[in-house]
Length: 121
Image (tube, rainbow, N blue to C red; front, side, top):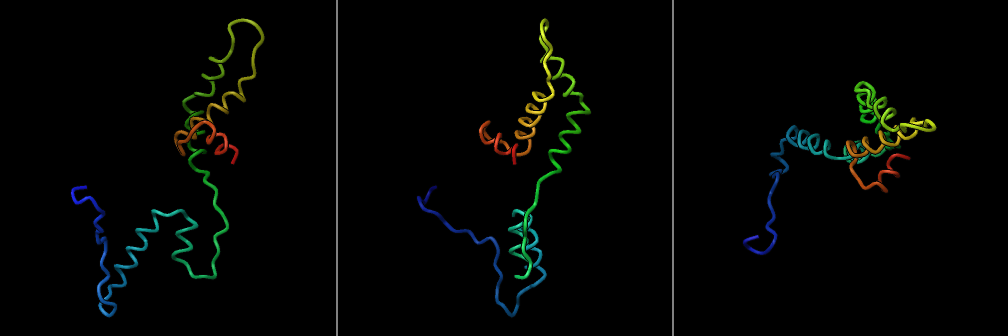
């Protein structure tokens, strides 16, 4: 900001090829691979004959659902949503939508519109 222009920083110097520490390069690649999506990390570190097909993030929603049920939030939502008088409502769908919105905020925060797309996929 003081100079008014970008100043490049050297993050890692590899040095001369004949003096290269290959173990240090492997550690650097492994460290940087943790910052990438699984498919990108595989594509950048694997041989060309492997192909990443897909992955599905499942663990976070599974853990949150068990925590949700263990804290009995599903039961609380079911009771709170019922009217004092009149016809009883089926709160199962409402509770699942509320859980999905909470899970979206915890795992991939986004707008309500984007959350709807996240939930369906």
